[in-house]
Length: 387
Image (cartoon, rainbow, N blue to C red; front, side, top):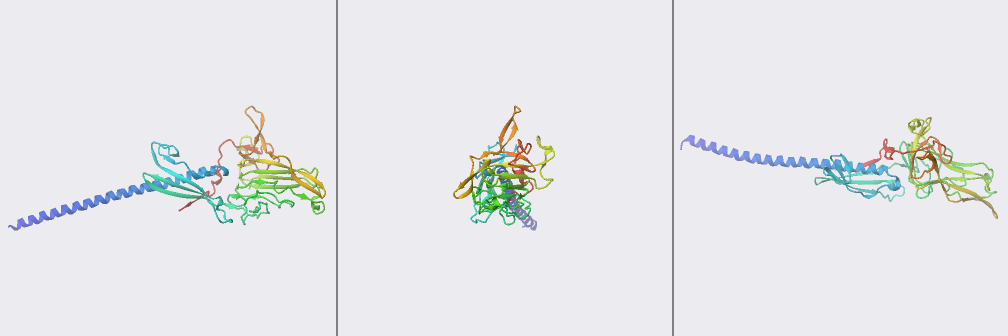
């Protein structure tokens, strides 16, 4: 055989081997490219699912913040879809959507009685995008309690108001007792310089200034009361935003007993520049500034008290008189006539220095537009993302 033929055969063999190797390499490269494309596609889905889960958790948290404390949603929420055309969440399944989110809202139970997480809520959002699942978990922020040692506004177990420590917490404060309502002590002078001061004060327990006041006084043992001097309880709450639960004020005339008593709340702003100018609120006092108050409880009322005397033994007793009377303001109706408006369940702008037991014109301006509770937390952390 000619050597040139052998070289030709070798060249054909090398070429064939190259074709086979290149084919194998090309196939491997194609498989790798396809796998990489699938990996990138799955990563993209995972990323979209992750962001959708966080967005769903945030949306539910915003809705949770907007609700009053007694109406906070809890349990399994309706499935929500992200509408790509409208670019928003909705409960109805749209034609073109990115994915859906299932959300569970759970109140956290803390076995530690000294802990503060009994007011915390956890939101778990599970998003599904093209079969890929991702979960986001968020918890409400653990704000200070008014009974915290750094504030000492009241006794946690008793609800009795105390002389507070003069500390500005710089964040919203939650007022919640272990059971009894927040109240003044009975048969003793109110704490001096008493006030609650914070950017926002959020009541999770009622205020009842008639609580514990149905007591008796003996003219010999309680000589300090036999002076006829008006006995005034007043709790100033200095905050830009106040959210109340039930509120009960009290009034005790002097007739038939040794002294009169008055127990009220005063709504004040924490500084001269806080709040909103009255000139920006229709119907308000243009020379004053206003905060916002939500009366989220079922009642805002005045409990009248009265004196009853007993000759044997000689004592004066304080007793409840009739049923509590709801507090209201007068507003103009569509006919231009004044009619009473109950405070309970409503929101108002309050004039700096408003005394709820002596309401004056332009002290409380009804809020017609949707102000929203979530705005309270614009400058604070309302929740914490969990891993």
